[in-house]
Image: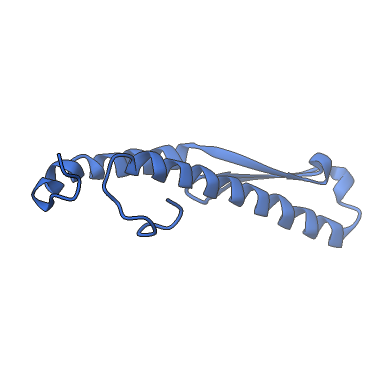
Length: 107
């Protein structure tokens, strides 16, 4: 079977919509956590990029600037993890499809 046979594209893409729906559901149910300051600040984010929670230790409350930096760092780490999980899911979903390199960012 030639993966570049356009007549065969319907068969290859038939389950793509279902796989996309499954991936979106998995992303909304998968939570990652960014931690900063040795655990002073924790930010939980779903893999569809919704902030699920923020935990701040009372020890971090004394210095406002430090707290802002810790929240920013924890959020950045959580978002990086969410992007990594999403990218991994996209690679799994696209497995076996004849997608030219560079067509979909992250693959």
